[in-house]
Figure 1 (tube, rainbow, N blue to C red):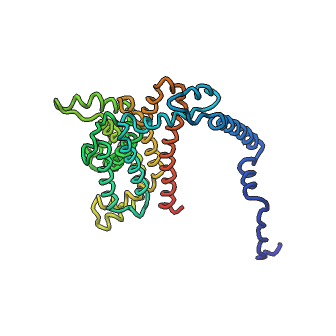
Figure 2: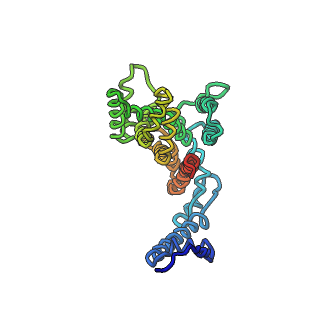
Figure 3: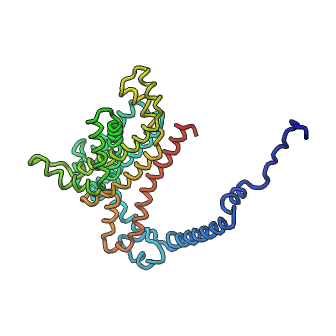
Length: 366
């Protein structure tokens, strides 16, 4: 029998060559079918990119004198007409808000973006952030409505564009998230009445599309109000979005609660914590950490779903974009307008996605 020796294995020799080339070989040309698919898809992407560059850059019209779209019509089908954006961007972004007062919704949008950025900084995650949000939302209300500090009053019927989209999305998620937490806890409650009501709410709201809720809020809800009492159309749509978001977020959070080990609940009980302190300090932080990806996916979906308010006559960003190209002179160039709006939606959704990835990495240590 051969003797067993403890001779060390030879050191593994490092692979030679460029790491990028090795990655391409391993992932894109690891086999003949994989290589064929890579070549075909690469050719399609290159063709599409070349066509877009020719249409969107090389042959495009960027500016036109006055409101004359004849230069755009001359290159229609060959090049893009980006000149429609400088001509219509104020209506697309701010709708029918008074032209001379459009600095107010523009400042409101900047305040929203500043709030989003500050809220992503973990150093600001303290009680003062709540006060900052209250002060900023009060300032946004003053800017949009006016009627004080020398600002002229502007009714909500004149609001439109990006500020309306941000208002619906921000308030819908800000109020829908705590509502979802309460409903998720209610579904796991040991009290049959609370659990049954929570289940009924979730199944009822999730069983109908958001469009039907918006119709109910716009048409049916005023019928239940006392005579002479009327709630603004934007507020009714906001309530419908909050209820819809709360039901979907409740199921996401309930999944996170189920992923928390039973020992965490027992540890909270052993420390003598009350029900609410146990969930606030121990259970909910872990549950939310488990479901960060689906939570952000839900946030992104609801941000885009705000465009459905057009069916009840509210001028959000997408609706103002559609209305902006009613002008016969620019009606042929809707593709360019929709690309412009898509870039705005993409910027907000991509920022949310990137932040969720960084937050997940921070909380999980990966």
